[in-house]
Structure formats: C-alpha cells, structure tokens
Length: 230
Image 1 (spheres, rainbow, N blue to C red):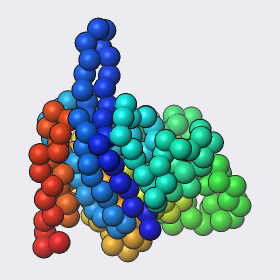
Image 2 (cartoon, rainbow, N blue to C red):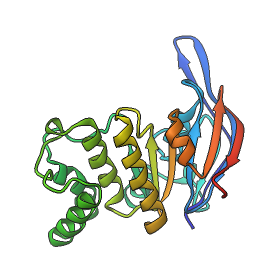
Image 3 (cartoon, helix red, strand yellow):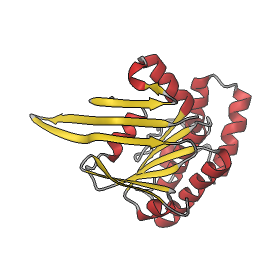
C-alpha cells in the first residue's frame, strides 16, 4: 500500500539572516487512492510540502514515511529509484525538455526504466491519445499551447503507471475550459487506474473536485476536510 505519513514535519529556510518557517511540525497521512488537494495562500507551505513528499527536498526535522519506509534512511540512489518507479511529477512550469517532441517527452521516463521500444511506443501512443494529443505527438513544446504542454506533462507523469502523482498548481497556466478537461482526465486516471493524486492549488475548481481538502496557513494545517460525499 502506497501510503505517505508525515510526522512533526518542519522545514526552515534562511533568507539572508532571516529564518523562514515554511512548515511548522505538520502531521498528515495520505492513503492509497486518494484525490487530495493542499490549498492555502502563497507562502503557506504548499509547494514545500509537495517537494518534501517527492524527496526533492529534505525536512529540517520530523519524518516522512513512504510505504512504511522513512525517506531519511534512504540514500540518494534509493530516493532516485523511488521517484523513478513510484512517483510522477506535474510541475507548474511543465518542465518539458524543449528539444524533445511531445512523444519523446512522455517516453523519457520509460526509457530511464529500460522499457523496450515496442512497449514504449504502445504505452506512449495510448496515453497521448487518452489526453487528447493525437496528431500532435511530433510537435516540440514551443509548438504547443500551454494547455497542450500541461497535457504532455500529465502524460509523462502517468505513462509509467506510478502509484502517486504530485501536481503543483496543475491548472495555474491554462484557461477555464482546459482546466476542467485536465481535471476530468486526472479524475478518470484516479478512478480507472487507482493512481493517488496530491495537488497543491489555490484554484477553486480543483478545490471543488478534490475528495479531500487540506488547508495550510503559515506552515500549519488549519483544516482537513473530506468532501463530495467521501
């Protein structure tokens, strides 16, 4: 079971000589199959929490356990392997490789995993069609709209069938119609493939769709609400 458990988690940054307390001893558990969002104002600690869960950063104190294993006890190779094999990332800035086509960007994780060419073609073609990018697979990122680039980023995150997808403000740079379509897509992936989604957001559309809404303020959890009948 791909559960995540955060215990007394803190993160403090130094800005010059000033200490910034991004997270103040939060306790939170995310269970397998959740469709959850972390919301709150800018500076509340949302992205910091996501980066810590994804092992892109390390906490100042406290612990994060993934599948019962403390991330602090894992070396760099083990952390990299966990990210590669179990976690998909969707970044606000897309983070697509500019010299690779949509197909090649989505294929990249499978190449790192050593998946055969024939299997890569099958999987990537299927997922790009599922996200509505048929006919656009050979386009470079700068030949795609913002919404299309975000679809490529989601396809890249999903194609390797991770247990968890971490999405940082996934609807921030797209119009309302595209945002709703992306949310439909991610909901379907959650329901049909059992992928756990954890978003950061300040978008009311994402908050409305989330089955669980975790509110951060000044690095503290101030509300944790299960909604939509869950």
